[in-house]
Length: 246
Image (cartoon, rainbow, N blue to C red; front, side):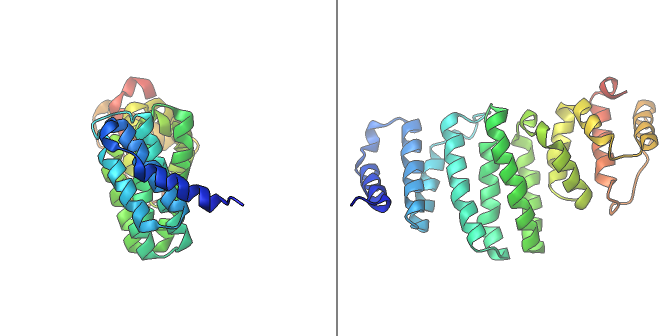
């Protein structure tokens, strides 16, 4: 009787017998991330990580948005890391597996297809909550990753998640998601204003808009206030395109 494990071993043999010198860079990337996926299913985690790492070297880092092969590779690698993190949820695992998984999902979400990106961003938000719950060092590491990677996101892909992102900013006003929302605010100020209206006092919103228009200091809140990050996002949106939000 042929089992699924036997089929995986046969598939692994095929990937190992392939002559990569006959392949293009894109084909090599596919070969190695598929090999990584097979090894992951066989619980050969170290070998899987090596295969995914090799596949990543075949990706053009200057490509924006990501090509389909690169997105599929980062998605598959992210699933592998995510599974490892959730199999052992503690701070060390969050740092060594959870954060790299989020990093890979961010790369996958750069695809020029909002529908495809949606499920990757959902995983970012879900995994991030568990990383934060793992400890203060994991939370700090997450904030660093989000701030660093915010520069390379495709803002349009994140628009459906504005309500969830605003909740993150209310729960942790100084979290790394602030950088991502600020990036979105620079590209889509009107959508940001629409997301903020149910959360901020109308008088405060009008005060911020008027302050920016008159070029005077914006009404500020203490850094630990749950709406402090939201006000900063609103200010950024106003300064980006004031005529859109007035």
